[in-house]
Image 1 (cartoon, rainbow, N blue to C red):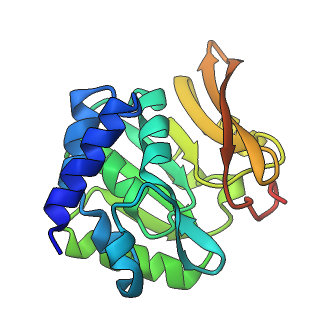
Image 2 (cartoon, helix red, strand yellow):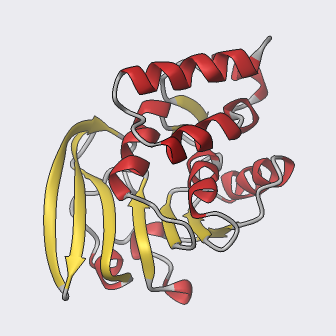
Image 3 (cartoon, rainbow, N blue to C red):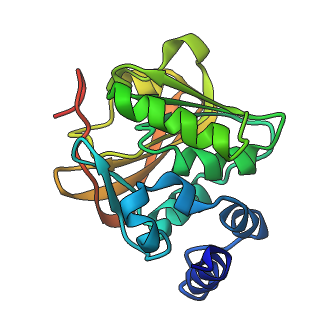
Length: 213
């Protein structure tokens, strides 16, 4: 199966749909091999623009949703990023390309088997600027705070206060809010005040934990 051709075709589709807008995001999507982040038995679905099951009722997000989130966050080289919900490591891998060698992605996942799998996936794709931790992502990851950007790959009942606290001033946070059918919220912290923008409807698995469902 020609994964490279399928990857190129998917990126072209996402550009035509207006999901991928910048050359930086285009390059990241072309560099990260999504087939390395999905279970072996469904690798042939790797470049269908759809979420895919990865175990524990969790999914690897659809490529268009990853594109929407990273474009909306306006990620820059050298930034420190927090991801809530590592999953298979794919989303963090895309972000790792955007922050470059001088930036770093910290990602937290509650299922130990997914943590180990994400670590293996990132290692085999030679991505070194991502740290995967186990824990309750709804509480953020205080030990590396504050962060330039925070994004959540599961839906929360509301924006967890620890994430607001762990966000740098002038930082951005993206989170789906609601149950099953939810709203994608982009939050900016400016001089300690919170400004929120609704980016539209989306569907995510629920956030579980102290500040989750």
